[in-house]
Image (cartoon, rainbow, N blue to C red):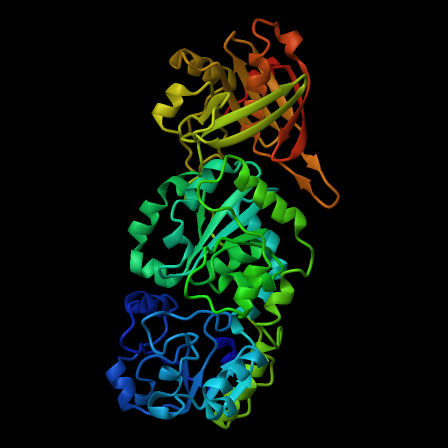
Length: 536
């Protein structure tokens, strides 16, 4: 919400942390990360301020001197937290915090939707009279960043794949608490060339677990390419980039609905979700992911069915019950807070800041268990993490990146050409020399290959023959989609393996590779002397 003060030299921003939070260290780290000025709580209580902005009614806010504004916290009031405050009260609207000692804690309650005013009125009519509907500043950033979706997907390396985002709130009913194995199970069962996975974890959960325990627990999924989104801005950019969201009952699902993404419910029920709330309505009307123990193929089928069944505007209607003033939230908030300050606001309209691009996965899979279906010159390929249980046609590994154990077991070993370094001292390999050396060093390898570009590869078969592989992209109505050339190499490896002993001339020709649900025409031809001497 800080852009409401952008360009106003009269405003000085200070931050303090209300004592009592279990997440105080990480909260302060977030403030320090943007180089904001903080003041200790004791000092804050001794001073007077022109305006106090809080994102939660909890804690001793009454000790701070100045007009207090309570801002929206998450997408609406959908959860109750057991053992805290009043039984069955929505977190954020609990009279134990909203009305400490029977008096409203804030001068202004900034709410996101008129229905929330009615809910506040049921708790405290005086507090409701001090409320205003301003919308949701977090949603403003998401909406302002929608046109950058392609840029975010390019940064993530999504390509033509479907980006499936898992979201986990915090607490005992969160997705990670209830189904901790789901990220690894999805990573192992969803074909790598059709789906990309990402995970958004609530900052509280990150804080409680610690980054080390979180990443170690997610290691199998991270090694398979799972993107673990950062907790402050990156999660929102990943959500904009998403095709579908698998969610528990956390706020992120309503933001996904406002972006009109496919929402798949993975909440197994409990005591926290409030019946009839916007989140409950969204989950009740969303397709469900099967419970643990589902048969092979059912996860992919459930996701594919949900994506196919999604209709534009279908999920946005549920978000409209939680978010008003969409596109105007910062303007509305500016009107209210400048009214409390007694100042004329700057002339320029406030605008939400576009989200920065997310970072790609820290782990790019380098070894795959590859399933292949051959039908003449039509070859369908599906790649899964090397540790996957399903039976595979062969193991494919990227030499120099995959572990030596995987390299020793691979039927296909390949290498990717890398851009030259800035150093004047370089060492390069020829395609012919490297592929011959690989087959000599790894007796279990039947095909060695070099990826020279997204459309050009050279393979050497176990017989010693060199073949050039030319890959055509898949042309669609409004885009051209390239696949990973390594997936095509697996198709070529399998097709050549079905024709042992045939001369090079007999193996030349055209193939159709089916990868990630798309068709990629491929042309095989004997490698020319010039191509054999290409370096990388």
